[in-house]
Image (cartoon, rainbow, N blue to C red; front, side, top):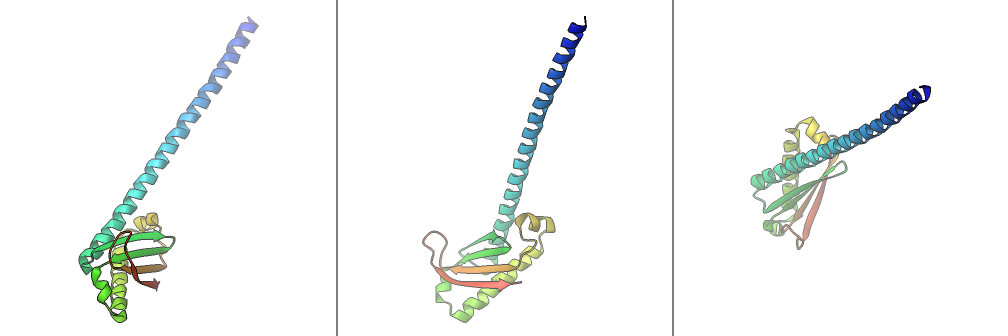
Length: 148
């Protein structure tokens, strides 16, 4: 009788251990899926916010194209327009300064949480790059760096 009870208890302990291991595996998978989902949502929110900045800059300045990206604590703003080729250095500088000001204004309207997810809560530099057109054949005309 003692052997039967000991065997049952032994099998019960093994069963609990196996169930615990399976449950741990399921919980790890759920956690991994949740983290992946959160990461994808943050990437999508970031892309949407940057696209909105691009659209606003294109509209405000009549640009052929705009593409913003985040590199560390720097916001890189690539603006394209065929008219840049005909501008003198002073006009390019004024245009880049206006783009910088407009970009910072757009950022100031975003929530702190969104800025944090973009990596821009500690923004210290805006780089405005002016090109003649978007794409692989674009030629860099000028680069302007604005420190905070």
